Image (cartoon, rainbow, N blue to C red; front, side, top):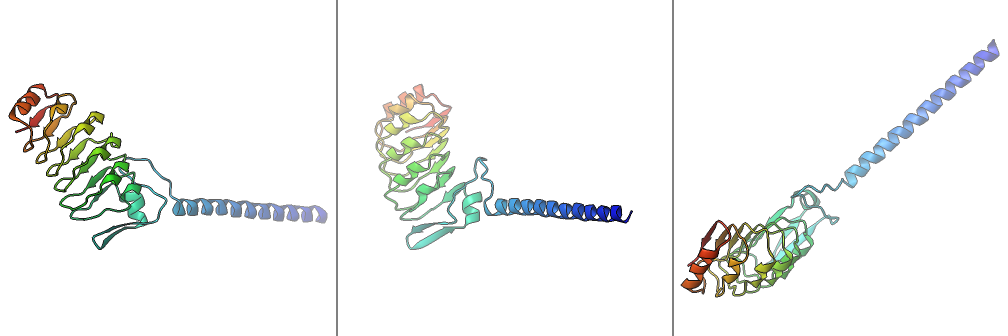
Length: 214
């Protein structure tokens, strides 16, 4: 009887020890999982959220720095506005941007913007832009504002199918016939170097909803 009781106690202690080890391992697994989620958060693919492995990036421009913390860089940055700047650096790495705005600046080299392939809205008005060939890779654009620049050649617009709004007013464009062949819902192209006859032709053949031309 005493021997059976001893065996029972031994088995009881073994079961308790096994239970303790099991729950300890389970708690460790849970802790490891929680820590891994905290240190390496799941990278969602929802539109408008920006993720990058870098903890921070900087925009050095005209003696000023814009520093994006890990939180804003990874979770919040879907749009950036850099108005009045003379230079833009490191912008090409923010390939998840959906909206970028640069107005009233003296920036001359904007070729990096062509690497922001997820842009749907781009505002570059009131600059000194002459070359817009960088737009070729931005086929997701829906809204594009290039008003008040020095643009002459608009042949790049052959590459677009999704544009809803385009502003090209107050530039140096002479040939606007390309906009009779592509569909843009709303087009602002007044105050350029085109002829009145070209405007009449565009208005008669325009495929979108409204066009302002003069």
